[in-house]
Image (cartoon, rainbow, N blue to C red; front, side):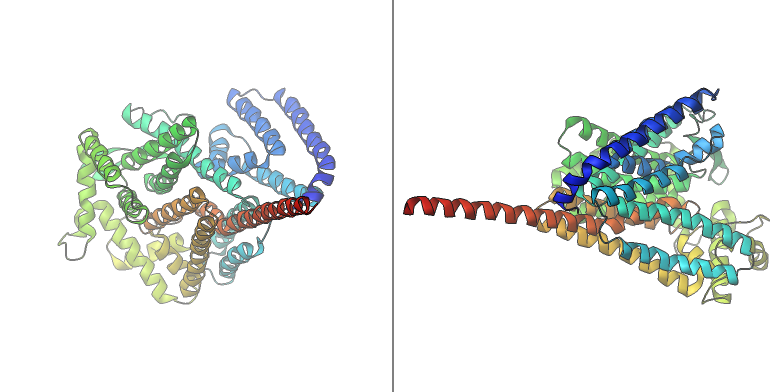
Length: 506
């Protein structure tokens, strides 16, 4: 929170500085426009200029763009499909400069961000240690650089999310991703336009559904349907919160759009892990939020009405989940994906048993998979594989030490979300208390899906961690503001009563 006196005095200096930045951005964009011949790049550049100017004018627009761009992997699409340079890195640097200028010139100093930084850095130290003992230090080094980029985004979010308004803005950044990727993915599946990648926003692939049956599975911008389902599950409870609490009908409609698009996307990915995570999220919504019975019955009715429109192969694939259960009697050698999963899990456990304290090294699971799988004899594939479980991956690559530090990061995130929820409730801001609860449920859905997939796209995870770690301080700042306003109100009442008393005496 900023001192009001300092804010007023320094704002006169801040406006010209930001205005000069905006003018420089416009001039630079105009110069670049004369050298761009690709229409797609030209549109991206124009959007980028508008976003930068908007962020200068109001930093919450920068926060919204950072969350939406990161969660939907827009920068990666621009790089791979349009040959553009990374737009994420300069934009993050731009936001960092804005945060610094607002701090120095306007007195808007981010509060209590060092604990979040220390939490993330502690886990990063474990990854750094891998450089000294990993069998393939090059992969460990590349993984460390990727982690540093993700960690910077998480810290930037902690610095930016300092109020209920910025907290709500971050939620809408995630919902925008759901609307964009979910809508395109649903359209792609319903129209069977799988050869159309929709400007790089909707990948799809012909894959195994059940033994002997193949079908297309949508993947969004993630290159794998399971990861796509994982990030879309998170959106469901957040969208529901906005449907319930937004005041404007347009925003309620957009939140409902994000809810429907995200829900259908999880289905059309044919992801079994995504299905289980979605069921868990819906169950938590019912158990924790305790909606009216009428609302639960209406939800069940909608689900029943959707059943006839789902492909028969979807139910066949979901039924294969039973084969993973102990004592199911299923022969893992008879189902391709099941056999591969069992091999990947067993290999990860064996890696951990071989090096239980520090693991085999960060990002070294795939490099060592064949050596272990050939010894196991369950997987006939002779290609590098991933752990197919985030927790087994952490255990195999970083050992007990890494798993404990990763657990500490998750614990800190949930503690911040829970404490933030309590503080919002304390000052009667139920809308934001419920939003913190929605983030809790969505994050739990992400982690549930992570039981069945590894950390190939960790940036989305660290984005959620950054938002989670920022929750408590955002609530504390609102509590301070609420207390200050309450004291000012009481002071006014006291002064008024005093003046009235003096008037009577006269």
